[in-house]
Amino acid sequence: MKAPAFAYVKPRSLAETFDLLERHGEGARLLAGGQSLMAALNLRLDAPRILIDLNGLDELSGIRVDRDSITIGALTRHRIVERSTDVSRYLPLIHQAMPYVAHAAIRNRGTFGGSIAFADAAAELPACCVALDARFVIRGRNGERQVAARGFFKGWYETDLRPGEVLVSGEFARLGDDYRYSFQELARRHGDYATVGVAACARMAGDVLDDVRIAFCGMGATPRLAIAAAKALEGRAKPHLDVSTAQALLEQDLAPFDDLYQTAATKMHLARVLLGRALARIAVPHED
Ligand SMILES: Cc1cc2nc3c(=O)[nH]c(=O)nc-3n(C[C@H](O)[C@H](O)[C@H](O)COP(=O)(O)OP(=O)(O)OC[C@H]3O[C@@H](n4cnc5c(N)ncnc54)[C@H](O)[C@@H]3O)c2cc1C
Image (cartoon, rainbow, N blue to C red):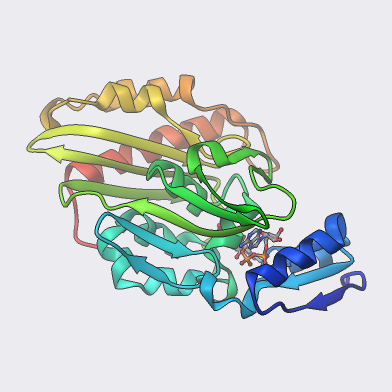
């Protein structure tokens, strides 16, 4: 199938983008890498009157390291994020997750912001952003606002973005060298969205786990923080890590649905397995 006919425009500034969004309202869609949007149009799941192509807006691209934070521009391609030495050094969780995001050809065009705005519940980057407690910078005609990743994802493909707004970037705090990270995923085939994925990190204060953050993808309508499981691990010394209690507590944290391929019970089992793998890796780190 081919997409329904649409008009196309490539603005040269964010101000022009806001004008276009205001003028065309509900009939407009922003185009970033097109890897999800064009598939939706070709399947006729959506029929916008006009696509507003963000690819002329260089200000939305790039990775910046500041004293206390790292910023990934919305238009930064997955491939750039995957290969960035700044990301591997300061955001190892995202560095570990990138090879799981689709295939190389899709990563060449797909963008960080497209993945966040599209908000597929099985996508890797939203779960990483939730685990890392990122903030999203959003701009509209009337100014800029910041939204915590933990409040941004509202439901299936639903986010806090309002009509007329553009996601500009994601900002991450620079965590200390004593943090450890693990991204684990199971998918039916390499490059597929996660059946279940887990993004986990924790500070290792000597032998003791602290600031434990665990977020899952594929386990509900949005990325899910595993709060009870993380709490059970807080303050535990490595030799006394009670992995099975944390695994059991996932029942409280997660609300998976049956889907075409897996029952909710199977997903819960896989989530426990992945949490066990992630904790093993955090407690006994390997070189990437
Ligand atoms: C075969 C296949 C397999 C895939 N597998 C995976 C996978 O395993 N994991 C995964 O995470 N993804 C996967 N993807 C999706 C891929 O990561 C996409 O790149 C991503 O979901 C969308 O990014 P994009 O830049 O292509 O956005 P687009 O397709 O251009 O846009 C997607 C949506 O986001 C909106 N949008 C884009 N940028 C902005 C912005 N800056 N501000 C506001 N709204 C914006 C658009 O209007 C549109 O609604 C897969 C895609 C395909 C085709």
